[in-house]
View (cartoon, helix red, strand yellow):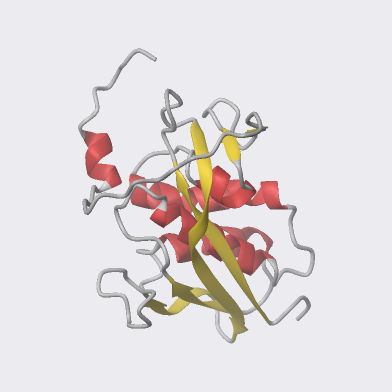
Length: 203
């Protein structure tokens, strides 16, 4: 066995669908985010020991089943392709509210792949982790779009149209521009909301 035995990674929350950039433009948010710890264990594949909220309590809604959590799905994709013998156990600390429009599922997927990547004998460069994090996000949102995953992984403002994936374009906004996030007490399921869209729409 080579590489580190354990690692912890933080992934920031994000705002997707920024302005007119529907599914293609996203922004990382300073402050809120998810933290995932990964450690090598006996056995195979990826498992989740527990998922906790910011209150320190076990999360009442998120599953620890490896096929039902964006963190483990993304980490499994990376470990299956680049991992070694043995398995990895994840512990997830949720800092992004569910169905908040702040990229909750993306933050878990990104933090998991970054933590697991640190366990590899030859860790991949950060941009190369995008396809694996996207597999976790796709499970949650039922669509292949990187507007939350890419900024959470790469930071800043990111342009990520499907035609470029896994390539992205980081955008440097003019100096002096700030973003302000107003978060109402409202939950919206991404997959259900996307299901209400027309099949075709003009951009």
